[in-house]
Image (cartoon, rainbow, N blue to C red):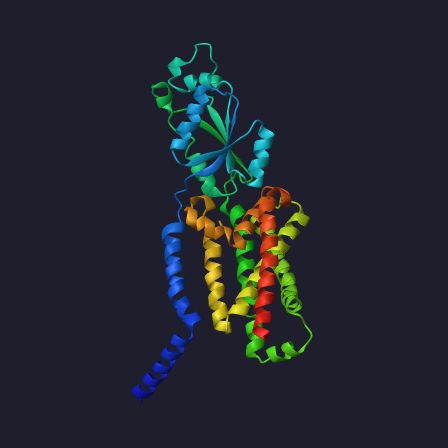
Length: 381
């Protein structure tokens, strides 16, 4: 026979304990609230204002009107002008822009030929009459970004000449770099490295200090001459090798099973991986100094993990997020690592060509280690 009186007593006890555990109670409220806001506002597959550059060989009023017409679609935003294709392609590889519009010098002639075929000169060849008026060079690694740019391929420009366009001829030629076959796995595998490392590295270390406290080892550590920062370093170093093993497994299987290319230098790949592993481990240590038990440590890990997956650019393009979501994303180490590993693995750029993300991870690691050490020292006092 069930005694509902005893059940009620246990229920009252658990409810009272939950009320006293402010961290857990806060997570109960914050996790669904944050997820609702993330999915409701930040997750947007209708990408707008993609940062792009332009090479304007024409330098004419018509080319400027063309740029304004494309900008009016709000699909792209022209943020840079380049004078050479080499400089533009370097910016594309470094991730400063996601596409380049090349406007040829003879754009006015091409635009006339692009409209009704009857407007073309009788002596014009088929090749001349079928030329697109301009060309897009696109970072095809992100299939959503590439798809958004490709949607402009048949963009009507009849308002420029007030005449109907020839629908058989594409308005723009689109050249896809780094992933011309548009395989989603090419973009997913490098990003998965960031997700797995975020999950495991933070999870392992978030319970590091808490575990010592629960096992009764903290008193022993207090009596030893080990300094706070020495303890922090000793806690994270073993997990660095675990992280490197995970990266090797993911990229190795990605290369052999899914034919995901590794175009960058292996030393650069090792460098950015070590930076991100260190940043993630330090973040876990900071959580460990805040949490009072392993349950709280796990809850805080989930609180960090979900935004890291949704806002870092792993699943949804960074450019499709509203400004406030982008600010939050910039505070997450995973966002910077996503840019770095995709740049090195897929585009073959040097890690210092994306120096902002490199220095950001370095600063995050140093500041996080300092905060964790100070918090642990304060606890000892």
